[in-house]
View 1 (tube, helix red, strand yellow):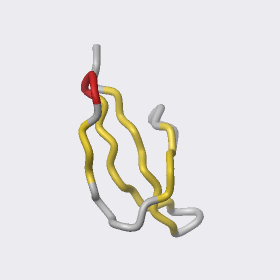
View 2 (cartoon, rainbow, N blue to C red; view 1 turned 135 degrees about the vertical axis):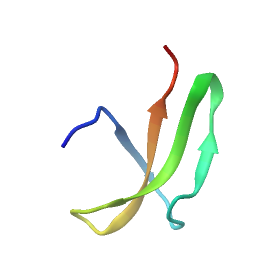
View 3 (cartoon, rainbow, N blue to C red; view 1 turned 45 degrees about the horizontal axis):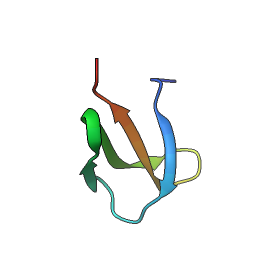
View 4 (cartoon, rainbow, N blue to C red; view 1 turned 180 degrees about the vertical axis):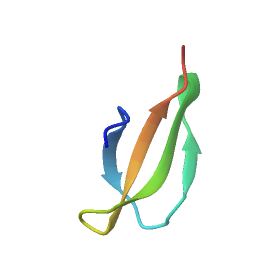
Length: 46
């Protein structure tokens, strides 16, 4: 399932969230295949 999200740097805390510039939200999500946590960025800009 591809929602157009780009997996970023690895992180350690699940659901850790940071709001970046221009509506970009970076949150920590578990990678089901690797069972590791990675930052995923979602761009909320229209």
